[in-house]
Image (tube, rainbow, N blue to C red):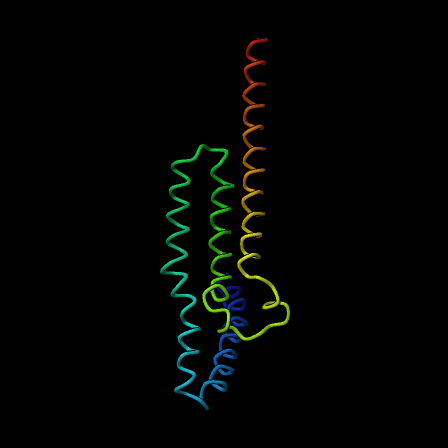
Length: 150
């Protein structure tokens, strides 16, 4: 088991080392200017750990304690997807000019895309929750009918 873990970790460590080499090739020639790039690379995990993860965790905890059972799972999935989508869209929503142009990325409205995606996510949450509620009620009705026949 330990050997398998080491063998699985080696490609990841090699990719990490290669990424560091590529970053140093990029950053070393223009060190004072590349400091902001270093902050940008480190900012993602910091923003995630300081903002998005606590919000998603607190929302999940509150949803688990407040909502009835059929709503819990879908609502928690919707909250996590909302946090992930917000994290992915954050650079373009915050500073659209700060991200290098990518084909197909800047030719759309980021706000509209995010809101449309969230509308689809929360519509699916609503549909799954209603289907689960109907299933729970049908099972309860069958149970009542089976006890009435006995």
